[in-house]
Amino acid sequence: MTARFSTVRIDEAPEVTAPDGSAVRPLCVLPGAASFARFELAPEQVSQAVSHATVEEIWFVVSGGGEMWRSQDGRDEVTALEPGVCLTVPLGTTFQFRAGRDGLRVVAATVPPWPVDSPDEARPEQGRW
Image (cartoon, rainbow, N blue to C red; front, side, top):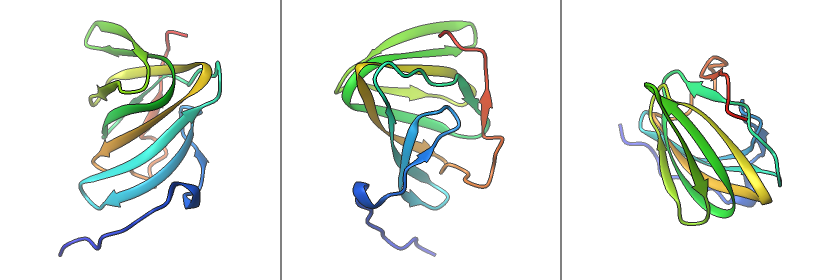
């Protein structure tokens, strides 16, 4: 069966707190395939470091700035976040992000969709900041 198409306006999407502490507005979902959301950190806010149990993400910075730290298989990297930057968070990657003085706003695709009924999806980790 094919999923029904949907439309969501950002100003009508509920804002919830993600396990990493960022403000998130869940948007559209393609059941079994992917979900899409907008994440936001206030100026100078630092997220909790986490890793995901079952999902991977692609992030795109839309406004503000900051940094993203990712650690995977012994490789650590800090990436400057600014509008136009796109990055991936593969399965099992530990990551943490922080906003600069203007805050940070990103949109992200989650594959497969974020499992809303799983409190263990985002696992707390030791972070850089």
